[in-house]
Length: 461
Image (tube, rainbow, N blue to C red):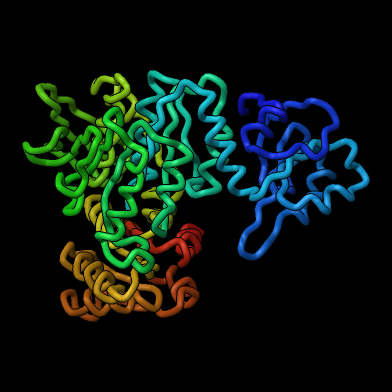
């Protein structure tokens, strides 16, 4: 539960006007959902492209909510219970929500870390949470609460005494990270990598880099940027500025050097990190060699908060994954690597690596469309097909319109018999059980819009 805020304090922070005031009241939660708003909540009716939540104010009042921030006062001023309400009038409820989050953060003595990147940002954020939580009262956004609404709501849920806030920042357009960075004003920023996600909107990988670097827009010499310089675009000349830059890599040029990765398949990985004259071995129970990079980014940021590498290793060992990222399930002698949360060429290849390192008689990859890849989409899908074939998966099943390019590229290397293509997911789901044998391990991956979790469910029935 958030720290209690008084309505008059909120009104001042929002530069709003208190148009209804029953008596001084405290706010314990912030809500944007009229279905769950209740007494003690401050309800913000947000206006989106397709709806205006001001029309749901009566539902919130029926649920017991009595405190509101509105940009249209007409309906609420005509409500029969208006004498029981506190109402602040503002120009824009979404902007007001963001401004309140920024104000609320200013009431804490807190270190703030912003995490962005094309892939790996949620995993890196979760790793940081486990590390920092060993020493400090730490908060983070959960699920995909990483946009212009989810991030303010996350902040407004920080409990009293929170010492470290770890905030994942998502984006699909220029200016979105800038907005989030303006709300948070992070002390430390992390860029996990520059891939091809949202390239359709941003034009090129260089455009994606520029958008991610907006995380440094409010930095000065006291701020720190941590980057994965194994990524070809996150090199020194692209990422240095009027702030401290820390790099993670696998050669002597980086500040944090990763070596000796042991891949135990589904049981996780171990890796060594060298920083200055210190060396530390890390154990992770989550699979994927790429997580050595994510883990080291988290360690580098944590050390800026006074956490030692030894303490960081203790926290990382307790790490558990969020959502559908490389979640391994088993039933009836079959294992499924459920990585249906999102997809890009980098994360597809990382998923294939996990599949090939895992224990199983047959290695099957079920790969669906990667969305928002822009005009280069056929090329990126072909690359994934080639990669799967060269890693020698036993069977490749491609699903969706763009996935035909995965199938075509794989067939040219593996031959026709080891590749199956479905333009339609429903047809795959009706036939999938007939293809599976005891001892199979199956990777299921695709963009969230492809809803490949339905295929996982079908396999696990």
